[in-house]
Length: 378
Image 1 (cartoon, rainbow, N blue to C red):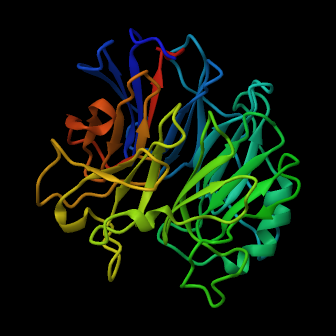
Image 2 (cartoon, rainbow, N blue to C red; image 1 turned 120 degrees about the vertical axis):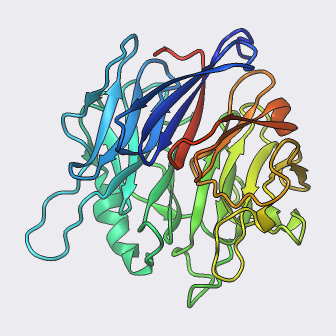
């Protein structure tokens, strides 16, 4: 349970800086702080659920990618002393981080540990609360060279976009990368096993291959960590461990809507409730709302059925995009749902998405939204 009198804070990353929205206790009124690092592309701002630190993945056009850290009780951002980076390699074959893309706080038993994913796909770990970062050799030098022949060029390049730590076991990790797939490690990233059985991949020469798939977003339920969901290039899937074969729950979506999209969000306590934002994936993949009529779809039964939620959203002629990190849910007892658009609009779905209203417009294109309750850094 959460404190219903606590404010909710939305950490919003955009293509031109970061913004912070803070609500009153009723989540009816919102105040804006920022922009921070105006002009920099901010792929994600993430608050540590263990309390304290915020991390920001930023890239200035002429200075390159870096990580900024805001410690508990402070208002200032400090640049990482050693941001995520691949080792320098003489001649051909080297890689350089184009953008730090996502963060994941480490296990509750390991305060100060963070993971970061990059584009091109790389995995990094910090053990000092984001000040310095080292590559996870088992992924960067072990797994990735084995699968890179299957990593196809996609818009924006290959991305390690999803990381999850099993709350029961600090050594148990999941990652997902574009045109690579989902992978699991039980030894802190030293060794990896593909976890893609059952996921459609008609674009591959061998659709049943163990890797090369294109997950768009992976989420492990915090209260029931044997329940996994993914929004894939080829549908919405669910996996209940210890099984290793995914089930396409997107088959239950309305046929005229389909199950193509980028993000998904999970109820913080109910493992059967989740939200997705379907996109137009027909023909040349316009990546906009279907027919210009945006809607979120919610399932309350683990994907067996879906309900359209569009009350308050534009009824027509809305052709925006919602990216993979721009859909989220807060942790209040009666959670709200939030999404940001490629046209700079920020929306809140009150009563678990039953009613939508716009709380900001005319921001730069929104890349990520995270909801934080009772923030330590206010």
